[in-house]
Length: 145
Image 1 (cartoon, rainbow, N blue to C red):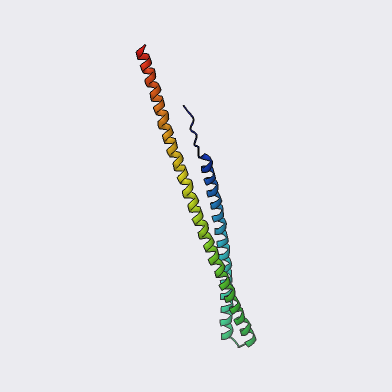
Image 2 (cartoon, rainbow, N blue to C red):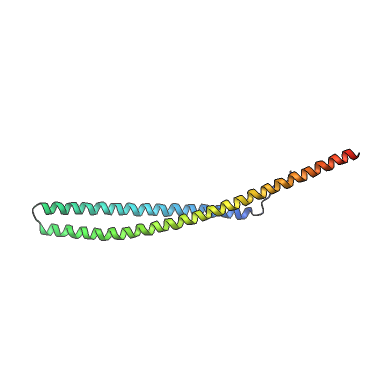
């Protein structure tokens, strides 16, 4: 039997490599997003702590210096939280772009794999036709003898 050779195998190999690269980029972007979200969570916890401390200071004996420092700390934390929320948004956009690239790479690979399957089916039909022709020739040769 003849050996199947797919003439666009190198393109399929490149598409597989591009898909692997896109998967890695997506994983990196996802890891960065998780890291940014964790930083935001830590900042929110610290801000809540300062807010609770400020509420407690209002209820205790009034220490204006301490209340002022804590209120300033809350405002600073609000600023840092807003900056971190922007970082999280950027990381989410990066993940979305990486996901879209991955989807495109997967689609291209699947397309080329389907083309390879179709070429293999055509090859099998050609081999079957050649074998059938060979058998017919052999039968007609024996019948003619």
